Image (tube, rainbow, N blue to C red; front, side):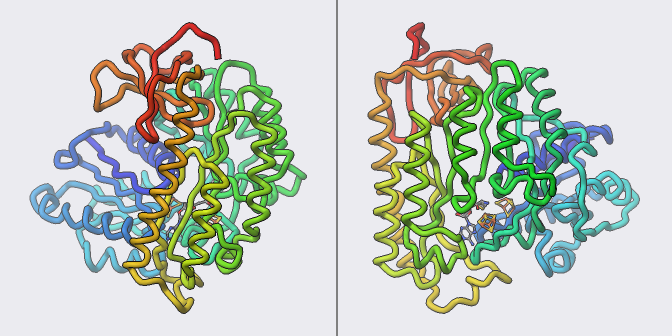
Length: 439
Ligand code: SAH
Ligand code: SF4
Ligand code: F3S
């Protein structure tokens, strides 16, 4: 009995898929690479932009013919898309061959839902409930990296964003549970642990015991052993100096901060409900750079928010040049039903959006190329993550700052720290050689 999981969206979903895999393996299923022969197909969905949703509906549609032949195949749709109002009904109507629909907090029911589906009973539940991480046997799939949730949900309600509606209110895990999980992972040989939350900086606020994210980092930074710790995502409005001081204090915590800016225009930021100005954001960047040498700062930026003028957009380009991000995820604003921005006047025409995203990407590429050039000739410690699928005899890994480096090597290096001298760069990708030279 085989299963195949389609994972869409962010790291939160990648990690949820590891929990789904754990549940399916407990039921006796094994992972399979060919969807056509799978007994269970899971769609772990994302609805952050319209393009994500369209793609997923297309993929679910492709299974119609297959299910006609393979009547016992069980199809599960879960994740953020199925949590949206009206979506379960729409799936039932347009894709009646789907067996199970679960919301973002209903994973604990997956086992029962599958057993029902085996008896040809449909199962749907998207009611919010709180589950504990410990309930799942996770099947970790990304050695030497491991994901650890620290808080779920989001309370920020940025006016463009669907996440608070589909992931619910902020819930933090108990600090002791997180520390125990990280200790266990380090003991089991994991070398890079990434803490996950929509807004890691608000960790602990809901626990009521005075816990906060900086305290959590102090506890995790003291765990002995050679491993790296990263975290995402930081919201600029809540990123405190205490957090950056903790990053600076512990060598295990990487000098790598993902700090989504969204826009370089204070007026657009106000309408996005981001609670910071362009100036405050740039001050934050300065504070980080002054405390963390060689830091890699990455970001998310959106163009085409309702009412964005050419001047607002130029402010964004200017900020990109000032911030000097090592890389940036650039998005075109997408209208999401039920969010305030969807109802705002002055939605931006497609051709203007296209022009702006092209210019934004070109600007950031130039910055990335420049930073890559500066790195050439230097030696960095790299954690080897895997073999490069495109080039035979080449492995890849990341620097502490989060930059991807390719170099000659074989699979036996995976999970090891090696020193690599950067020889050349092709925009975002760095190429180097293993060296005995010190950093
Ligand atoms: N919690 C994180 C981000 C979660 S979503 C944060 O606050 O930064 C990841 C990214 O998707 C966001 O940073 C944003 O840039 C983008 N995004 C969110 N909603 C979007 C929308 N409606 N259209 C286009 N991009 C969007
Ligand atoms: Fe969405 Fe804003 Fe929450 Fe991030 S902080 S998940 S962008 S509402
Ligand atoms: Fe992530 Fe997409 Fe959900 S970005 S939180 S999987 S809407």
